[in-house]
Image (cartoon, rainbow, N blue to C red; front, side, top):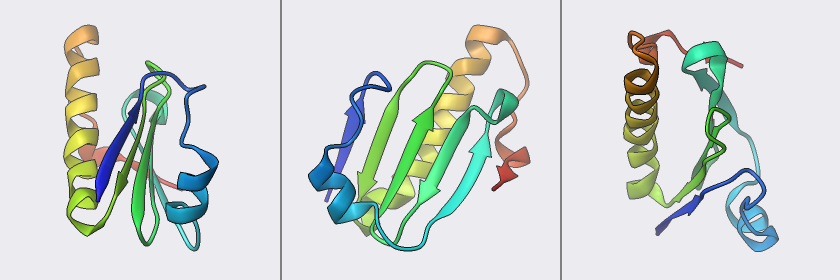
Length: 95
């Protein structure tokens, strides 16, 4: 259905997007240094909050939900290149 990228933490999903996609049960996983990248999986969407650089991304629809996990991996690698750290993708802290 779509991928919505917000370049700072204040430009979060609209009320309509929250009411449409970000409802019901959810599953949360944290990744990256200090667990600063949060992935929240809903029935119809996945929301990524990157508190390192303030990026927010909403993936909607079944096809795009899988892309969210690839995006988390990319974000971690991007931050590691900036910081010169090892990968922490496989050591996510479940919430």
